[in-house]
Amino acid sequence: MLLIAIIGLPFVVALVLTVAVGSTKRRRRRVALAGLLLAVAWLVVGYLASPTEPGHCSDCAKYLGRWWEPWFALFVEGLALAGWLAGVGLGAALRRSRRYENGF
Image (cartoon, rainbow, N blue to C red; front, side, top):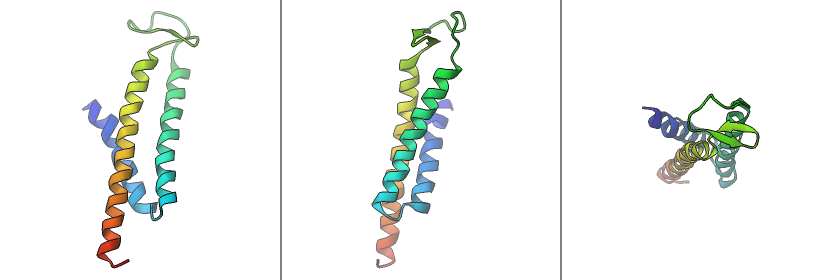
C-alpha cells in the first residue's frame, strides 16, 4: 500500500497537471521540472527532520551531521520521481491523442 502511495500519487498528480496545463513542450518540461524540484525539496525536508543525536533509528548512520539513511531516502525519492515522470509522459500522450482526434 505504501509503494502505491509513493509511486501512484505522484503519477496521478503529474498526469492531471500535464493534461490540464501541458499544451506545449515547454509547459510539459516545466511540469517535469516541478517534479524534480519537489523531490529535492522533500529530500531536504527529510534531512532537516532527521535527528542530530544517535539512537532514534537502528539502521541509520551519521551523514552530514544528521542520523538518517540517505540512500534509502534517495531510493524512495527516485521511485516517486519515476512515477511523476511516467505521469508526465502519459499526460503528454493523452494530450497529443486528443489533439489529433480534434484535427489540430
